[in-house]
Image (cartoon, rainbow, N blue to C red; front, side, top):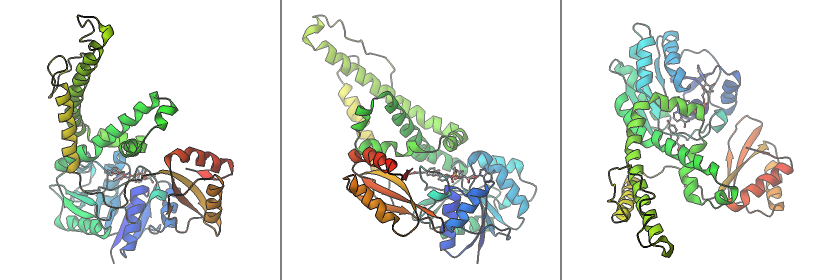
Length: 387
Ligand SMILES: NC(=O)C1=CN([C@@H]2O[C@H](COP(=O)(O)OP(=O)(O)OC[C@H]3O[C@@H](n4cnc5c(N)ncnc54)[C@H](O)[C@@H]3O)[C@@H](O)[C@H]2O)C=CC1
Ligand SMILES: O=C(O)C(=O)Cc1ccc(O)cc1
């Protein structure tokens, strides 16, 4: 039986432990936070012991990953060591600089392309990696046996193994993960300027675009810093498109303001919005071509969207989710249902976060968006804890 050691038992470490346990592996857990390690153990992700591992998984934050990998290479001279950080080039360089002689061959980077906008062991799920790409990133010095060990680990956790170099990986995730995070964040940040009535109009589109804006700022600062050049390159292209959209919108806004009856015969206000940012699709001055520019940008978006592979797992949420902490004891779910019924609110869907061996569970109650705030207020006022 293969024995893995997981160092860093948050969302990803705990999910890997749960998946490996389900595949029949033995798993040892380690975390500088005794609570995080105990929680992962109580959830069923493994045991807290010092058994000699065949493979070590470092699932710690990116800015400490290289150092922790080097420590683990030294501590377990017979084990392959991988990390799961969202950036790969910076970690590989760090490991090459820090690892002692004769140990760097046992390091192979990796990155499961699955996660959540939540952190910590409680959010861990055994099926998180099922059918999702798991990038295995050997360095030029990685030994074939170490690569095989990390491939076997990814496959046992139900990921689909994809082998890439660190440069290929970092360029790819800049476009498919890191820039999407930045765009979600920037879009959500604009909502702060709006009053609650405006935000209350939000439909599913806004939810789809901003879900990952709820991600952990500390983790994402590290990820963006760790792939700064790659992320910047994609954002420069976004900036060009944004400049083209702004110019087109300026032309259209001027067209609208000069076509009104009050605007005078000489079109004095023409050009008021022109900002000459330029860009790939910059329209000629005035409105001609501006609509074509916008249509072209929107069409490019359609074409990009069509390339996105089908999402594995649950369909996008059509409802608001209210997360309620419930004591893991007989009758508590029934009491929660009764309370929601008392508020006159229909439960559209329900998901229970499994917290095996833990005295509480999380009930994710899906309701119509218009009812979610009222439900939160009602449940809080009747003594329930809401996440
Ligand atoms: N959150 C996500 O969706 C994904 C994250 N990743 C990567 O997985 C890694 C872990 O991320 P999460 O599980 O989301 O974070 P998390 O915040 O849920 O867990 C991180 C864990 O690492 C522990 N830790 C902190 N310093 C440590 C150290 N020096 N040595 C060992 N453990 C240490 C923390 O106590 C915590 O339990 C990161 O490198 C991240 O880039 C990869 C794929 C998806
Ligand atoms: O929440 C999602 O949909 C994600 O895609 C999460 C995610 C975050 C970081 C990664 O390095 C990989 C995946």
